[in-house]
Length: 588
Image (tube, rainbow, N blue to C red):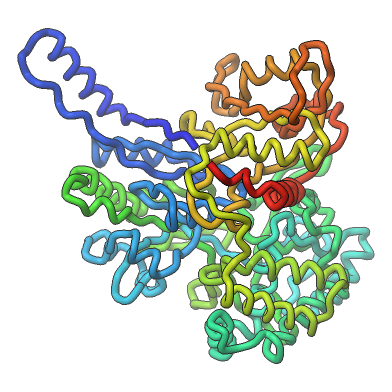
């Protein structure tokens, strides 16, 4: 993980003038070098935010740290628990209350907190303190293709019974009624709760069950079979299919109009144009209840922001002053708008309104009416993946509803009694480079390759990050599945035949990424490769070797020469297998 200092223009000018004065022999001592505030990017481009921040509060220096892996939630939790925490803390979920009080500042005494709506402040209240403030949030519901619905004059269904009738009409047109995004394990877990919110989890009894289940006071068996049975109806009708599990193409099927509805843990597109097809427009509706009419929508905050407690120390007072200015600007409509990736989000400020150009305008009534329920994550984080695996087994018809409920109880009991499975103990920090070597050796062994070339993630400027690389090292502590997933390379990997000379040249040059905002002929700094080699092999320039690479690292022509490819899940399993069979790899 590499951070790169971004100096705001005004500060550059000041530093330049100071240098000139010193060189000219003015006799004054140079101003003490200002220490930058660190902040994690987490898939957000802060360029416009920084420019506007400089207009309001000139001279604030920010150093951005990159993490573009698929388990950014796990990475943030690792930083909070055992790792190095940035000054400005960004998190994709509402952190455990104790972690908040242990590692974050209480912001409740600062005036900018009053800019947020009462409902959001109530959600963020931890025993009278406010440690994290929300940024823009999205609404998660049931997504549909507006263009297809309007083309055939179909009306939106109000419940599952009406949806089944509509599904027959959809099939008559040669289209799929529904696809479900399940390329990440946690998606089906969210779908399970989304469907259950329509008749159980949104009730006082359902809310109580969620709390009591986590503490061991309530069982899944005898309580949630109705929700599992409802999910199973979607499976039995063919609306949720085994073929969607780990399938990265499901969303594209929906976007192109091959499927009319989609389960998805959030979507940011209102329309998309396809050559030969035309423009497709998309909409969102409440989750469908088995009967009657549901108004339930799930809300999901894009990022929460807080401040590292270390800033309260006397030696960090200057940094604290700047950090408070950043949060003050963030807590305005202007600041909040500059953190939007697109218009399909809603501001949590008390001056917010949902405008007609917002995708959520059609469900404004549900949102304003308070028919939203937070995305289930906090407290469940260690058991989401094993529970999702049981739901996958239900989809594959490997488990019944009753067996799935029983499995939930066993997973919870194991977690309460012994915590998450621990692959080993990490005694000293393993660097990003050493972590890349470890992952490379795991993939070489699992895929019977000779060499692995894995690029490193990093921040090379606004909009210039490497989403496919190894994003971070490993901090000391228990090495659990959640932590393992932070080092898994994102996207498809493959094996290609290359000569020793080609391998060494690629390693020397590094990985270049073409960014749309770069001018023709302009190149970004390359991301370095780390090379792992099978034991016993010494590279010969003219010899051919089987090389593991990210498919995104290869040109379209070279991608055609790939012998075998696999996705993120297979890479994860390969790393798990390697660490279990080589436990010493986590030792210094």
